[in-house]
Length: 117
Image (cartoon, rainbow, N blue to C red):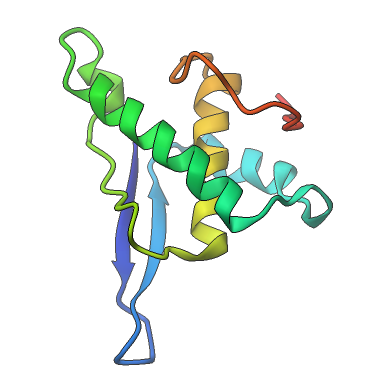
């Protein structure tokens, strides 16, 4: 399960920082192995894919028989700037689900993404 929530440690009153909370203990170790600045894409790239993944994830969360894995609904708002770090990590969470857990989300997947399984 994955959840996006405001980070209450934000020091500026005018800005809100968000953090991604992942409830799968294997993800953090796997993510650290994938996290290479040499392979980074733009924030817009991750946002575009995350919109598609979140839309499909939330749809699957409403379908009988699939709810158990895809709950809760991911609260990702397309008009909110979550920043590069959260978008990158969320994108890689979806890659983790598809490549490591072998649970398909999208029928078409990003091309050229290097994933170590």
